[in-house]
Length: 257
Length: 363
Ligand SMILES: Cc1ncc(C[n+]2csc(CCOP(=O)(O)OP(=O)(O)O)c2C)c(N)n1
Ligand code: SF4
Image (cartoon, rainbow over the protein chains, first blue to last red):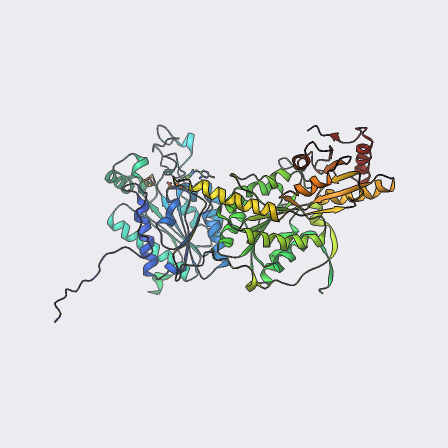
C-alpha cells in the first residue's frame, strides 16, 4: 500500500473562470452568478465553443473574469449582437449576461425581438432593481417605495411608473421555450439557480429556442444595506413583486424523464 | 467575361455584395432603399447566408457587430433617419475595430423630411454622428457599374483596415437602371484571414473584443493614437476621385454622386456655349481627395461647388483649396432635383461673376 495520501479535489475554480480578482463589491450577486455560469459551462463541456456577450453595467468587464471568447455590446444591445453571432456560427454556444437596465430598459426592444424570433441563445438576466454601475439610479425593476437616486423618497407609480416584469412578458412570446426566476440570496436558491441555468443551456444545445434565467440579485452598495440585510431584502421584499419559480417551460424535459 | 445585365441600383448593390463575399445582412425598412433588403431577403438564402429584418436600425447594426466579430463579411443599409439611429453602433464598430459595410441611400431632412433624393447627409456620413475620435471611409458612386466596384471595394477596405465603411448614394442612385457586368463570386476561402475573430477558445487563450479602456496608464489614449495611425494610413492610401475635361478648364465644378451626373450634363451644355468647364468628382468623401483638388486649383481657375443640399461638402473644398482660388456654391435642398440647365446657368453666372445664381464663398 502506498504511503502517499490520496486527495480528491472537491472544490476548485471552474475552468470557465479566469484567475482574476473581480471588481464586484462584497456581497454582490454578480460574483455568484459568474460562478454559476462558469460551473454550468464546465459541466456541459462548453467553454471552448462559447461566445459570450456581457452588458454595459457592473458586469461590463465580465470578459476579464470569464475564460471564454467574449465581445462587448453597446448598452442594451447584447441580444442583437448575440443574434448576429449565433446566426453566423450556429454551432457555437452563445450567451448574453445582462442587468435590468440593459435588458429591460434601454434594450427592451432587442430583448423582446430576439426572444420572439426564438434565437437559440441563453440569456442570464441579473435583476438587482437598481442601476449599479452608474450609482443607484432607478431601474425599470425598482420596487414601489424603493429608494433610488432618481426616485428620492421611493418609487412612486404616479411619478415613476411601475416595476416591470419582463420575464413574464417574454414568456408570452412563442419563440421562448423556458423562463425561470431564481434568487441569489440563499444556498438553497443558489443551487436552484444553477439548475435553471444549466437547463437554459440545454435548451440551446437541443436547439429548442430562446431561454432566459432571471436572477434576483443583491446590490448592497446601492441599496445601502449590509450584505446580510441585502440577502434578506431579496428573500422578503423582492420576491413579493418577482415571485420565484418557473414562468414558462415548453421544453418537455420533465415529461421525458 | 460575364454577361451584361440591366438592373436597378439597389439590386446591383445587393448582387455585388454577395459576390464580394457578404454573408450577413440585417436592416430595417425605410424608403428609398427597400429594394435592397427585398433583393437580399431571397438572395442571401440562395447563397447560404443570413438575412434578418431587424426590429430597428439599432438592432440591425448591432447584429452586424456580432456577425462581424465571428468573421463574416456583413452589410446593413438604410436611409438618413435610419443611419442616425445606427451611429452609436458605427462608433462601436470603429472602437471595436470591426469591419462592416453600411449603405446610406440619402433622403431629404431634417427629421422625416421626404423620400426624394437629397445629399444633406455629407456631414452625417463623413463626420459621423457617433461619439469619439473615429473615421469612416465613405464611398460615393455616381453610376451603376461604379456601384459594383464600390461595393467590392467597401468590403475590402473594411477588412483591410478593420473599420466600418459607408457607401453613400441617394434615392436616384438606388432607382436608376443601367446595364452592368458583374465580376465572379469571390472565393470565401481566399478572403483575408481574420486571426482576431471570435471562434471559441480551442487550443488558445480566451479572446475579448472591446472598446472600453479603463486603465490609468493612458490605455484609451494609446488606443486612440493607434486608430489615428490607421486613419492616417487610409488618408494616404485610399483617396479616390475622377476628373472629366479638367485639362483645359477655366472653371472646375466639384460635385459627387447624383449631383456629379447633373453637373456633367451641365458642363457639356456650357462647353457648347464656349465656357471651358471641367468636373472634379470626389469618389471617396472621406478621405477627401484634398491634394488632387488643390493641384487643380491653380491661379486663374475658378471653383464652382454644386450639391444637393445647402452646403456641406463645400467645407471640405474650402479646407482643400483655401484662399487659393475663388469658390462659388450652388445648392438645392432635398425635394427637388435640379436640371442640368439650372446648373449650367450657375456655371455661366460664376464665369461672368455676376452673382445671379449661387453665392460666392468668403473664406
Ligand atoms: C447609451 C448609454 N446610455 C447610458 C449609459 C450609462 N449606463 C451604463 S450602465 C447603466 C445602467 C446599468 O444598470 P443595470 O443594467 O441594471 O446593470 P448593473 O450595473 O446594475 O449591473 C447605464 C445607464 C451607457 N453606457 N450607454
Ligand atoms: S454596485 Fe451593486 S451591482 Fe455593482 S458591483 Fe457593487 S454591489 Fe454589485
